[in-house]
Amino acid sequence: MRLGRLVDAFAVKLCAYAVMSNHYHLVVRVDESDAMSWSPVEVLRRWLSVFKGPAWMHEMIKADHSTGLHPGMKRVIEAYRSRLMSISWFMRCLNEPIARRANQEDGVTGHFWQGRYRCQALADEGAVLAAMAYVDLNPVRAGIVDRPEAASECSANQRFNDAGTGLGSDSQSPSIMAFDGSHSPAGAEALPGHELEYLELLEWTGRCIVRPDSAVIATELPPVLARLGLAASGMMEFVTGERRYNQSVLGHASSLSGLARQFGRRYVRGYRGVAGLFADVGRGFSPTG
Image 1 (tube, rainbow, N blue to C red):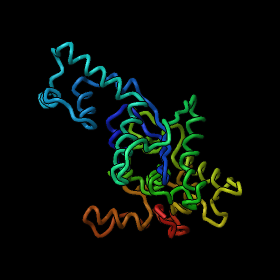
Image 2 (cartoon, helix red, strand yellow; image 1 turned 30 degrees about the vertical axis):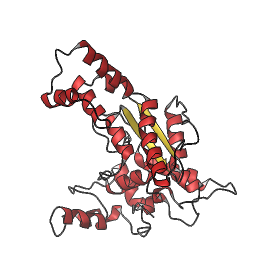
Image 3 (cartoon, one colour; image 1 turned 135 degrees about the vertical axis):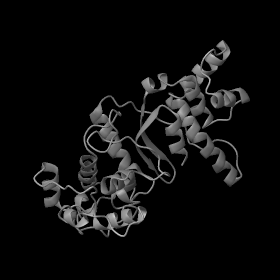
Image 4 (cartoon, one colour; image 1 turned 120 degrees about the vertical axis):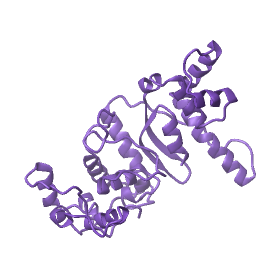
């Protein structure tokens, strides 16, 4: 996925995304301090992961040479560093290949996108979470899916899978920022709160969409905890510390069976001990719809 390639190359952290039939939405954060910490070789490595470059750049990366640079090389590298922390360049690198490919498939030339992308600044954490919820609920509002996690090309699907398995996203999905109370790496910048709290925010907001021209999360659909396969009582005991699980793994029986196969084992020890944390209610609801 090109979005994932660009997130890995640019000093841009992806908070939320939703790919619709004729447009897409992103919530991103530009990390200028991260970009300024890159060595010249790292800048070139990231740039060449997106663009082709002259031979001297490839040779410099191969030799891992960052000292005694010619002034002209330094200026080029600093220009690339500036571009790699620019939203305009990020969007250009994302939109231009899509337009070229679409025009080639349709046998036409000219503008593909209706206009330049629109960008809105988010001043605080509340604004970020609100914008993320807006983006993740786009497929629900459009009537494409009946619940946020059912949209395959959407960050809500990734977060639902992450919360349900704890194994992270697959290699085909773009990297998205973790929540502070979830499985974010120590010292890494993270979103405020916990992933499960955010999923409940999506659930509550989606069920409140009552406009006549919008789809809503059906009232008969089980709550998000049930769709994750979590028993409410067991979840409360686990979160409050009333009951401790000393097993080396946690997960629903079906998830642990898959994990055992991944490790080449017949079973994972201790799965019966965590059965109270999980419930079978809603297991029929696939995250990908």
